[in-house]
Image (tube, rainbow, N blue to C red; front, top):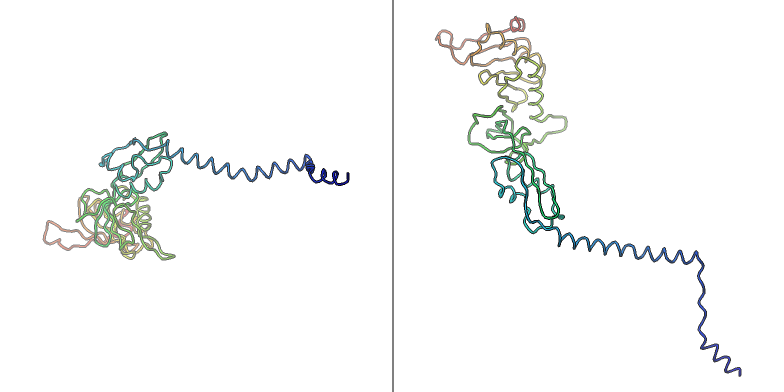
Length: 293
């Protein structure tokens, strides 16, 4: 009898311990914590596969005007038919276009689901003829080189002479290696133009030479070179120059020559040529008082 009871005790399954409500909740939370990353990964993989399969580039929509054809712009973007629309790096594609096709000033690329790439672009406005260390180029209004030239351009709105640059290539903005505490030649040009615009020279400056910071100069109306020396007292020098040019008793309205205003209180005008032989090489001295008479 005793043996039989012992046999029954051996074969009898142990009773499961019933979990409390708090323990069951904790168990569910642990399962959720373990399962959540798995679910996220599965969903991400599904979304990735879905984007590859569903959103393929099938065409392009272009908007803008300029010298480049649709095919040239699309090829420059680096985006191909069949590429995954969602994986395109839009910023890099935009940079490739403005670098490869320099006469495009700016471009915006957008995705148009499900299968189209939209490219909107703006033609660069050629404004400057720039001479860097003896080499001429055309640039847009932001000083991006759009074309290198064999000679000085005739149609640029303004011509600038600059010293040797660190960056001077088609598709890139002109750049200089500037030491701490020094000023970029382009910044010097901008400041010089800003000061000139405060005088009656406004709107008539057609060129500038900032290749040497100690020998700055401007071209007025394509006919008078204004020598200004260093930037010190530039406001007074420009006012003196403007007064001398405005006063036709000092400088004729059609005359060509050089106006040396490198000294703040006195300017000297030397005409390029005169009809009368006796007047050749003549230099006219103009004081600050005479310039404004």
